[in-house]
Image (cartoon, rainbow, N blue to C red; front, side, top):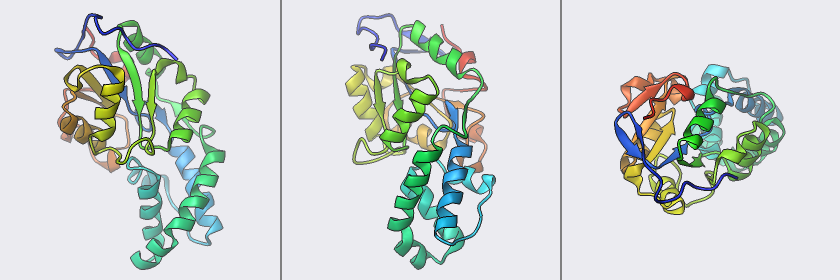
Length: 234
């Protein structure tokens, strides 16, 4: 993995704010993983004898971790009490299917590889923080050729709480050795923005992500980008 930028390295200005590190989200920001989720969820539903699910229904429910995703999908097909009772088994079944699907039905968003190179070459320390389980996150980053960019990787099981709680960002800032105010959060959703705001990190948001089906520009951020390699750096 690439080493973190030295503490004395010059700060990079992003939309007028100086930063020394960047925390980058995974699903919906770097990789379009909707196909992976769809295949895994359909496999889970079929194995449990439940109904179908559409890509639109999946896109509106990803982003808060596997537990939340499975719970919400079950409630599309069952009353709340039945869905909650089935959840532990469904989550195990889902994880089995996701392990097989991970990275096989997904693709990098345009400009991601070039954008990460640009951030790294500018001297920023890079970390990936995602609500996806750590084993799946690392496997996906490796399969998509992105693992080398990150000195720190934190999945949704790395800490006691997930985004939108600020804890994963705060702990990652500590590990990177940079203050939250100098650590950029690069994401695609309200979860990323809320975690960044609570942690004290400036945030930039992708316009192409999932964000629960809601327009991302309604979420306050330092800047928005259509491609990661077009993020304004100075």
